[in-house]
Length: 118
Image (cartoon, rainbow, N blue to C red; front, side, top):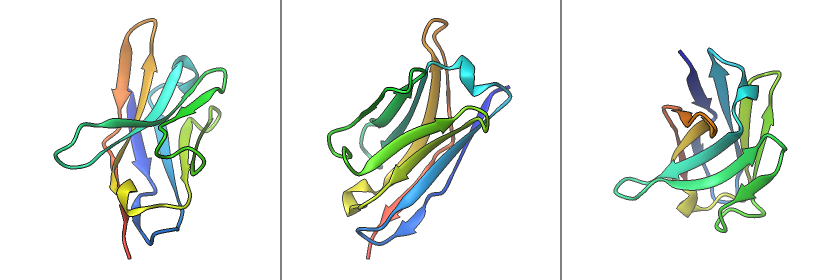
C-alpha cells in the first residue's frame, strides 16, 4: 500500500522559514507524473499551493509565488516544500499529494500543521 508521510511542520514566527518533506513508501516516486502540496484552513476548501510534474516544471498559487519552492528527489522518494518569508495567513494544515494522471490514481498524505504566529 502506498503511503505519504509529511513532516517539517510546526510553529514559526512571521518572516521565518520551514521546509516540509513528504516521503513516499510502498512505491517509486517516479511512477507519479503529478506531485503537489495543498493546504487547508478549518472551515475552508483545500487549496493547491504548489505543484511539480515529471519534467520538473513547477507552478505556484499567486499567494506563495516568490516565497515557496517545490522540489523532489526521486532517489530519496521525497517531495519538498521550502517556505520562506512566512506570513500568518500561511497558517494551515499542509497536505502532500501524488497522482498518476493516465490511470487516475492518487494518494494523499495525512497532513502536517504549519502555524505562523508571533
